[in-house]
Image (cartoon, rainbow, N blue to C red; front, side):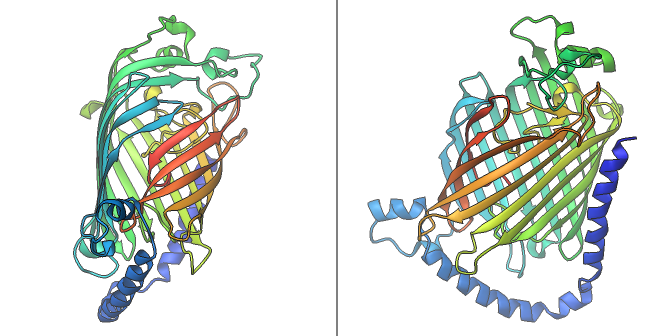
Length: 438
C-alpha cells in the first residue's frame, strides 16, 4: 500500500523529534531555573526595545506626518492592526473589505509565546463573500494553547480535476477525472467551517491536544450547466456516493505539537511541528466516515545577528486519507492548508488528491535600514496522486516567485505581503496578504 511511504517518512521525523525531546531538561529542572529566566527576560526585553527603536512601521510614518511630537512608539500598548483588506490573486480576483489582526503576550511568565487573533469581512470580483475569525492563544507559561477558527462564505471553487497534471492523456481510465490539460470547471456553494483544538503542554514546548472540526457545504451548483458526468466533481460523487448538492465533513482531531518559534506572525528562528489524526464520523453529521493523517513542519534559521530578520525558512505540509473518503471539494491540495497560503503561483485547488504533499523554501531579507521594507524569494514543489495511474511522489510541479514586505506593526511583526509567483501551464498571479505565508 502506497500510504506506507508517507507513514514511514513521517515516522522518521517523529523519531528524531522524540530523541531531541529526550535530551531536554525535565520539569523540575526547568522550574529551578525560573528565577534565572526572569533575570534573562529583563535583558531580552531591553535588547528588544533597542531593536524596535531602530525600526519604522506604518504607524511610525503616520505619527511623523500627523503627530510629529508623539512619544516613543516602542511603548505603544496596542497590538492591534486594522487595515483595509485589499487583496488579489487568481482564485478570488480583486478583493475589498476590512481586516483586524491582534497580537499580545499574555501574563508575565518568561518564555510565553505571543497569542494572535484575526478577523476579516470581504467581497471579491468573482462573487465570493468571506468572513472569518481565527485565534492561536497561549496562556501564561504556555500551559495551554487554544487554536481555532470560524468561517462563513459564499464560495466559488475552481475544479481542475484530481491529480498532479502531466500534460498528457492516459491510454486508459477517465481523462476527465485526471484532467491532464487542466481544463477548469467552477462550483458555487455556501460554506461554513468551525474548528477548535485545545492543547496541553506536557513537556517544555511539547503539546498534546484534541478538538473538533466541521466542514459544511450546501447549495452546490455549476453555473456553466456542464453535465455532471462530464466533470471530475460529478464522477467522484458517483464513485463514492455523495450528494452533489450538499455534503459535510465533520470529525474529531487528535494532535501533537512542538514549537520553539520566537514569533507566530514572522519567526526569525525556531521550529514548528504539528502532526495529527482527523476522524470524520457520520453520527456527528459527516457525510461519510473517514480517517486522515495531517502533518505540518516549519523551520526558521536566522543568518545574521545584526539583522536577525535575514532568514531561511522551510515548510512542509501534507495530508493522506487513510480510510473511508472525504467530499471532493474538501480533498487536500493546492492552497488547502489551514491558512490557505500554500501554492503561490496557482489557484486554490489547482492540484488535489487523496494523498498530497507540499514543500517550500523562502529567503527573507531586509531592504531598508529601518526595516520598513523587506523582500523575499521563494520556490516550492507539490505532489499528489490521482485515481487512475499516478501515485504520490512520482510527479512534482514547481512554482517560484518574489515579493515585497511592508512592516505594519513592529511590536507584533505584522507585515503586508505582496508577492508575484509563477507555476506550470501558464499559471501565475499576484498574491497579496497579511503576515508571512508560513
